[in-house]
Length: 202
Image (cartoon, rainbow, N blue to C red; front, side, top):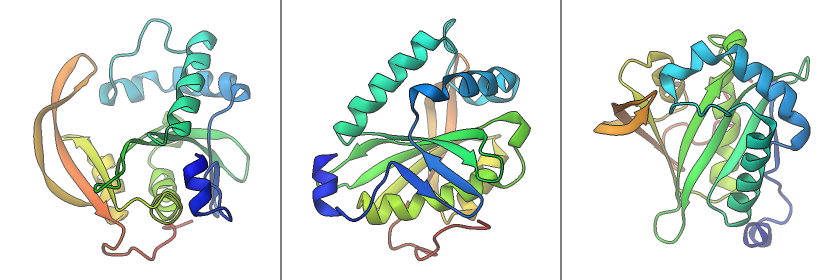
């Protein structure tokens, strides 16, 4: 984190503001709202995520996640965000830049989830549109990668609307809900098409 602040001391990456949404790194006081939303969205989310542990929604597990997040941010390897709707200030989902690789790569992987009550409204498209300028301009990444299961058409629409291009397919790429699943691979470059767009549909 200190390294990043030495590059761009006038900019922050802990909170990212958009017209309709705000991205903020998770804190302890988010627990109840996060756990309630995840519990409500279990049937919606589990087909697309790794198998949930029995204590996945416990406060103790959330605290462990926060400790891991803080370590990853400090080491410049992962940047998690919760997504909040500006009008009501409610938590609606999350997204993460993970597996940050520096050196000659300057690359990270993008993952995200949206709570069931807020799915299908264009919120994730907007959230990704808000995140990308920060990733490219503040974190100085060159390439953002993402992967989606072959039947996750909503995720494909999010990525393609944000300027990601499909690069191929990886067989048995991730173990999702107890099964190794093929994934389509997408990527967007800092100087790619639409790189000047700050957010879509804000």
